[in-house]
Image 1 (tube, one colour):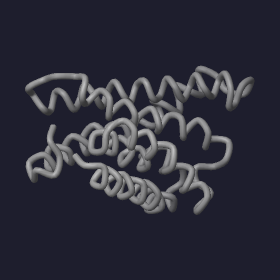
Image 2 (image 1 turned 90 degrees about the vertical axis):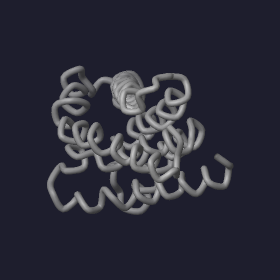
Image 3 (image 1 turned 30 degrees about the vertical axis):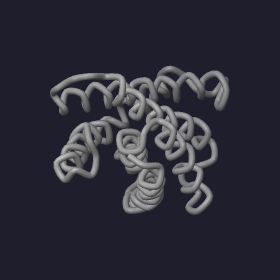
Image 4 (image 1 turned 120 degrees about the vertical axis):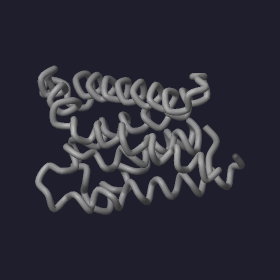
Length: 173
């Protein structure tokens, strides 16, 4: 994929990542339950590679915060790091993990990236961004319990989108 196509796809993922969450903010806590910003960032790594995936992960929450004040300031640094890890790892792992079964490869990359991103979020919040006020229980609740509907949406939607884009020859898996 040429650099121009990567830049355009990354910009589209950023735009979707900024706009999509606005559709859910009328519902209390919908952002932390449905995780709409995560979807385009995870896709960006698959579509644009690790560099543009990581850039998308940093810029998307920052731009959303600057425009809409969402995510809120205390959550922003950890979320920027978490999403950067998502974009970076989906880009890296999609090139490293080899599997003839495209769906199995997508799920391996997606699940590993999601787990490592959530662990990164928890570690950085507990040691740096929210040191002293962030606990294991808070991390488990935010990363898994509250986010379970969003995780399930990601596990259904992202493979479907990637397989459709592969079938349309927009991307090669």
